[in-house]
Length: 277
Image 1 (cartoon, rainbow, N blue to C red):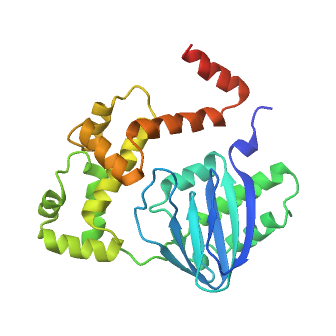
Image 2 (tube, helix red, strand yellow; image 1 turned 90 degrees about the vertical axis):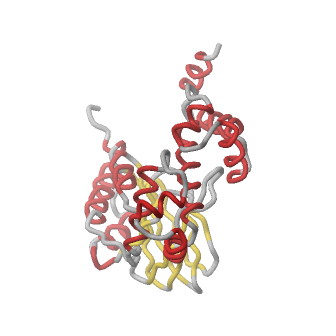
């Protein structure tokens, strides 16, 4: 076979939830959820070593949620959601391009999405090739989705952008406020009200998340990771990392390595182990 369509777009899981209780969606890929009745909030869950970057997003009936996992959905009373887990390179590309995660979208901006999701959930697509084609059509429809979340105040949005681009070099909220041209107290007040966490806390979470990515690479020492993420040294990185995640960087790196090996196929695992023999 020259081309495998499931590598581009596939349907991995369907969850039809009618509940008033919170639930969590897990699995690798892009979750697309349609809220057909009621209202709820959506937020990233506490995956091992993760930190929530933004407060829960409200979603009303007719709205959509696009997100990675773990996605925690909290209904406000009885609600009904149809949730599809999409995998492949196309869903991964859409997930990487989302302006925020989770991304709440207005259903009226992509009116064909509900019908496509219903057909996929009802197994009306037939064989795997047809499923892949329908998943790709759904992604094309979702590409036009507009956010249902109110925009952040310009100051908070600018501060978030600055933190994400310059976290390694920022000395703290004092310097950030100077770069924004406002007082430190004003920045903290506006940022916390809009985002739900203080700018200092947000900066720490971004640095920790960056450190986690670097820790996945065995060749990076703790001193290198600390330097690249804006920590003054390996000892300070270890203290902050332990406080925020409950694990030392070494413990987190070892656990991530075990998970990676466990996910490998038998042949891949043999090759991986051979590297260290």
